[in-house]
Length: 309
Image (tube, rainbow, N blue to C red):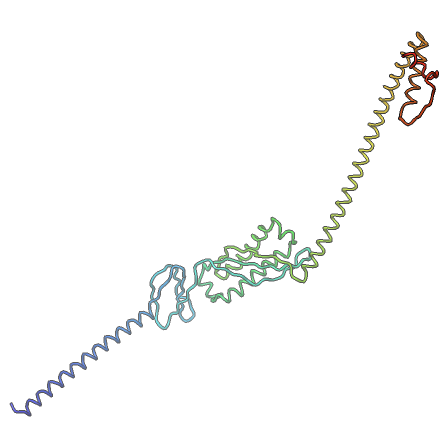
């Protein structure tokens, strides 16, 4: 074999190897493209429904399917649109508003609601987004609150009848929520405050009313005290008069008995009468300790003292 023939053969073999490498590269690129297309197709056709979700398949604005169970689902790429809504209980807190009560008092009411989306198709057709629900449904809640609370007084709102009022509001809100595909679980009033511009006036009026009630109660207490005191004085006078009458009777009986005894004693012994009278004179003259008597020891006044010695 000549040198030229060997060179030609080596060049031919090299070209064959290069041609085989190109074929392998093209084949690998095709496989990679097919893999990418498969992944892209899976991403466009497959989607996952979570346990906390409920999903709608929407095609050209029309709901084609409602999916409530979790799992892997299929859709038409570039045609179907997946809209998901939460199945859990959600909160709605509309802005506070003012209500004029039957007793002409204005209060600021701050309410909140708990709801759940139970018919996602109706929800999509009527509301579609949560922001619109908060706007429209929040207005319905405030309107129901205003209709019910405006028929009661402030004392009723703050009393034990508050639960009955909330039940009535809940029923009204529940009826309006059904048209949105929403189930209302609960509606509550968080706070009921007086507006700042009227709270001071209400406070002053309440203080005036309480002062008037205190004065009335104090006047009633004084009147009752006067009646009780007058009755006690009357009973006291009756008791004292009765006691005086009884004491006078007893004293009269005692005096009569004493006089009878003294009379009998004096009639039997006149000297005893004189002795008794002298003792009374001694007693009256010595009582008090402020009387000074200057007499002779042999005076007739002390005759019974002298006799005793």
